[in-house]
Image 1: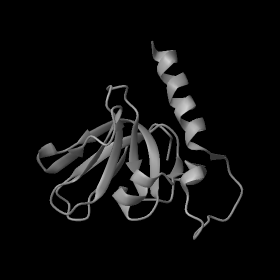
Image 2: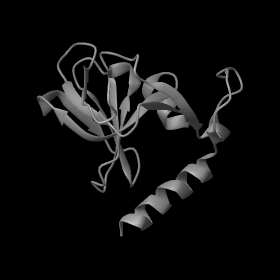
Image 3: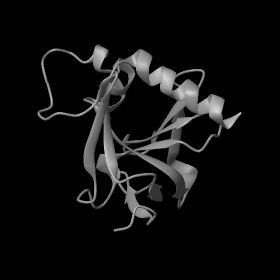
Image 4: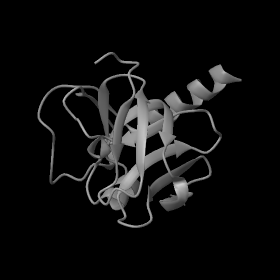
Length: 145
């Protein structure tokens, strides 16, 4: 599959179906407290540009901070998308919501400083602190303006 090819997915019950174009065929894992509470574990996410939702009538939204929101199925509760609220186009799509997970590789872990000590992923990869992630977001925002 080419990196620009849209990938389909949806929630557990099927009320929210989507097609998303991955920015890269890589998955990031977020260990922040909000993501862990939202997903019941870690948030395994694929950075995407364009996301087309077939029917948004069952898409719930929770403004989790001044700059981001979390989106979920209002019927079954599946965690689906983390979006920047400024409309900048960055959407982190839940890896588990894609129909086919095989194209993706595990790239990095973020908010590593918030990870509880009771689990750890094997393998070597970049592991960024919350401050490093926020600096990256700020640099990306500065580049857009």
